[in-house]
Amino acid sequence: MTWHADPGQLHGYARGELDPARAASVEAHLLACPACRAGVATAVPRERLDRIWAGVAEAVDGPRPRPVERLLGWLGVPDHTARLLAATPSLHLSWFAAVAVTLGFAVVAAHGSRGGPLLFLLLAPLLPVAGVAAAYGPGIDPTHELAVAAPMPGSRLLLLRAAAVLASTTVLAALAALALPDLDWLAAAWLLPALGLTLASLALATVLHPAAAAGAVACGWVAAVVGTQGVALRHLREPLAGPVASVLFDPAGQLAFLVLAALAALTLARRADLIDLETSRRQP
Amino acid sequence: MTATVELAAVAKRYGGTRALDGIDLAAGAGITGLLGPNGAGKTTLLRIAATVLAPDAGRVRLLGLDPAQAGERVEIRRRLGYLPQEPGYHRGFTTFEFVDYIAILKELTDRRARHAEVRRVLAEVGLDAVARRKIRALSGGMRRRVALAQALLGRPDLLVLDEPTAGLDPEQRLRFRG
Image (cartoon, rainbow over all chains, first blue to last red; front, top):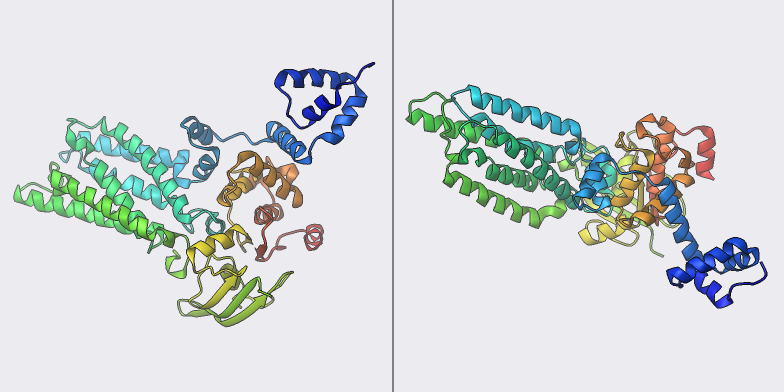
């Protein structure tokens, strides 16, 4: 090489300040000129070198996202949030399979019994409650102790996962509801109870272990459905497995679950930081 | 000088069992070790020092801050590395994915910087070669080193390590102590 690049241009190249055309021109010269290359090598700021090296390492050695993370990324979820969700036990394929089987069983039962969609209406709101219980907490999340000691609030992690579980379970239940016989507004009467019960279990998780909170809410729901159905059908002189008659699925019952959801959300907003600190009273 | 870890009259009970009763401790810069027989309450004390357990009574200050206050507790956790006695793992994750997951919990959200930090701590415990291997395929000693790696994320000011060398081979124990 009989000529050398202008020192000003070499300096600009080293600091990444040249426009792409000039940078490409200098780069082409550097490939053939050991003297200019040696000059540039010492002029690149350490911070820039580290950044470039991190980019190379990331491109060559970076972990490929898991399928669920790719799906979430496609939906616009940031990669770090997708990783937090990928670790949620109740967002694994096996969990979705169990939910699908349960819903399928309830739909088949609706076609073959006098009770119609009662079993479906009983089970559908419980699925997100169970999913939330299996999303966070000691004995459920294997890294719970590490998560508690980390600065990210436990309430944020729980709410993030609960939202994902509620959304995914709701989609599955809505698809299953389309297969119910005599499709009418009753096919959607599980939606508000699902929201109300899920939020109630989250609010209770500020004083109880999340699994115990979900268990208490689930028992209360089953008792309420069976009790109100029994009372309503006694008046009609029908057996318990007769048509859906529980007041919980009337407009007034639905309104009550909307109020429950609002109260639970308020409670959660006021007490969420209690989820952060694991104390002996919240041990399973 | 302010002690890094300061406990005064700390007590903790599990039902009828008294795990800690009026413990006073002041530990400054450097390494402080706890020695005692099984069931003496060492792990309970370390869990309190790691902010994962609240004492029933007494006063705790870590890095000059009060972990009973929500805001100060988060600040402590930003400067804390913790290795529990029995850390759990998402066994379907690779070594890298697991440490990356903990890094996200430690608020390292920038992907490139986070991954560089994960590579650094994995190299520090000699596990960079198994970064892509599933956690469930690692030996017990290697898993212990993975747990140690996550504690080192972000170069914490306070490291709380419970049985850090349990399960490590003699060579790794020497390396750890070095």
